[in-house]
Image (cartoon, rainbow, N blue to C red):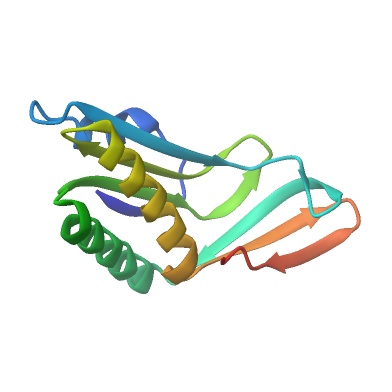
Length: 136
C-alpha cells in the first residue's frame, strides 16, 4: 500500500495492511499539520506531488526497508492538496516480528520519504506563504 491521496488519511487500513500473524509489532508514524512553525502561526499547508515519480520513490523506500530489515509489510500514504491545522499529512505503518526493527524501519521510511520523494509543501501563515524544504 503506497499512495498519494487527496482524501483524509485513515490509519486503520494501513495497520490492517501490515498486521500479519508473524508480526509481533506494528509501528506507525503519523505526521500532522502543526499550528506554529519557523517563528510564525500556520494557517494551512498546500502539498503538491509528482504522483508517478512519488509512487516509484515510495516503492524504492519499501524495497530498501525489505533489503535492510527483511520486512515486507510497509504502508505509506501521503496527502496532497489543502490541509488545515491538525489534519494528517503522512502516515506510515510497518509490521515486523519484533518491535526494534519495526521502529527502525518506520523511522528510516519517513526520513527517506523526506529525502527522495517529490512532494512539495507550501506553508501559509498570517505573514504570507513560502515553499518549505524539510529535507535533512
